[in-house]
Image (cartoon, helix red, strand yellow):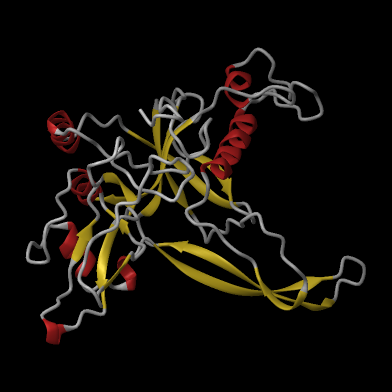
Amino acid sequence: MTRYFIEAADVLFFKDGREIAPGSEYTAASIFPPNPGTVYGALRSSLLALQETSDFSKDDFGISGTDTAKYAGQKNSKGDLVIKNFLLARRDENKISPLFRLPLDVLNRKKPDYSRGEKDEIHMISIRTGSSVGIKSNMPLAHLQMPWIVHEEGSFFEHTPSFINEKHFYDYLKGEIGTSDDENSLASELLGDNDSSTEPFVKEPRIGIGISSETQTVEEGKLFTTPFIRLQKDIGFWIELNLEDKQLPDRTKLRLGGDGKIAMLNAISENPETDFDLELKKKVQQASILKLVLTTPAVLKNGWIPDGIDLKTGE
């Protein structure tokens, strides 16, 4: 397995699947971080471009019998290229660390009433026991239930989308979000004063116009806005592939997004098992139940239900 840090050289745009309806003004919808499949296409194109014998006029792309054909595939066959992991990441002091979306079951108190003794606080929803699975949901399986947090009447909690570092993500997995008094805790991070400059990316909308292919003049009613994404300094993508590094060498160039912006693949040296992994393994061994957290989009054989779970019993 090979790890890379993808560093973009310009703003990026990843459009969603919705059609843009013409009008006097409209905005294209953007997805960020992009789906792994979008990056998969860029990687496959790069593999083909690096193969000297590539010829797109041929059914086998001119790569039959090569390692490139094995991974990138041909016109009528899929390749073996697999994305094992895909996350945002930050480079810091010659170390590249993944960033994780804050899980949806971490909530903060909304507009606390200080006169009633309420305070700014973070809650992590606990999985209730009492059912065969211990989970509650509005999904169709009758045995699942939703683990709502219990709080006093008149108080409200909400999820604030954000990204957290590797340490805080492992703290979350261990159920140790801490308090606002601990400067190194997840709770302190979420309740602190978040400066926009610390966010991994910023939205950078740009106004465009439609040009007639016949007259090369502006088309009436074709004013539109494109929400580009600009990654902050030292922010990129962490990706793990089932490749040998000779297939995609260090400093390989990619074309990413709707406008084919240039990005660079930087090889990451193998990371040994971290202290975070060891601590989490000990925690799992001591636990009677565990929580499965999906860090990338999941399209499984049974829909949202992971393979290996019986559809009738939930076991």
